[in-house]
Length: 185
Image (cartoon, rainbow, N blue to C red):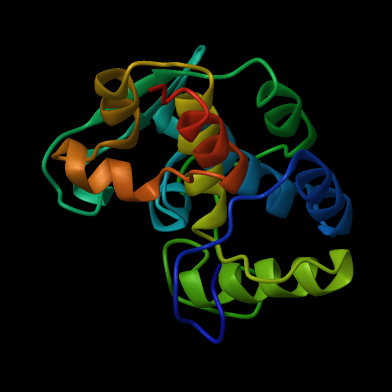
């Protein structure tokens, strides 16, 4: 759990995710964080999406917008993500998350603004220890707990090696107790 910027982002429970999305104030904000959850992407990757990156039922994260800039990732859009796109109507081609009307000359909403939106929603929902990276950790951990092969999760997350990916996956105290329970003399 993150404390004052230190440690790993918290993996969110189902209830915390519901509270968080209810605390978000705009369809744009709900769509942004829903993309992070349902694709396991980094918030910076979601912020750089263009309207042209949403093609039919797929979403494309261009290699130029990924952390290592190593490869483009393309994945099917999760059915639960579609209503967020429907609610958030993008009016023109270009950045999926354009900056606000405050005269900013940037091409897209920035990380600082996204982080403030996130922190405000967490405060309203009374969630502690989370960061924008919580959605990525939550998505990857949920897939792991559903017995999705690590290699498949690695393709989705874009991690270059399994060791890095495994640091993202949360292991609960109950899982450790259950695993120890299988040891026999």
